[in-house]
Image (tube, rainbow, N blue to C red; front, side):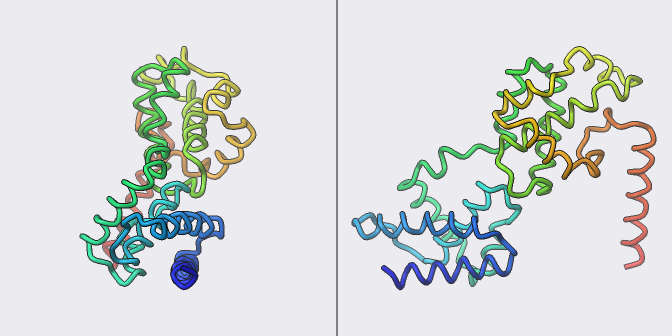
Amino acid sequence: MKKKKDWYRDYFNNMKKVFRLKQNAIDQCMDKVDKMLTARSNGIALTGQREAYAANIMKLVCTELNLPLRMKDISRVSNNPKPQALTNSHKKLKSVFKEWFRNYKTPLSLMPKFCASLGLSEQLTEDALKIVDKIHKEGKLEGCQPPTIVGVSLYLLNNRIGLNLKNPICQEAKQFRLNEQDIAETVGIGLQTIKEKYDRVRDSEIFVLPDHWLLEKERLYLKQVEEHNQLILQQE
């Protein structure tokens, strides 16, 4: 069992080097490996390609820690295990360790519950979903837990209320402006933590906001950025 564990440790340390991961990600991977190897030694049938099991564990931990690593990136560094092997090992892990998959919630799946608790309108909930989805998918708060990402997204949206009163949607939103502490208590994250994490997205928040929340000068800036990017593509 020690040799098998050493193989997995070498595998994840290589992932750490290639993708510049932090040690806590590797520790969580090895914790799952310990449980998997113990289950095998107790007679539970977890057969199949070890690279496929390692890749699935890596992806699961990346999802838990909100690290933007795709399975195809992980597979590329894992000698490209066959898709069927990845699928089979995923199914076996899910059947034996249901809690690994049951307990995880994405920021997107958590948002509607928190919006309802805060009494937000249907329009604001829709906007909050778009914001949290972009922040999560683009890895802007890499390493943060889902409730923190939700809290930052709501904090960001709440800060915009009252800035663009020319738009009817934004005018209507004035009645739903929230107390910052209420946001923190609802998502279960300290207000200071939310503010600190918000600082990481402050400079790029216009890129995650729905169009009707943007000021005219912000729209102009985004147009200039898009034109600049297109010019670069044409030169290439």
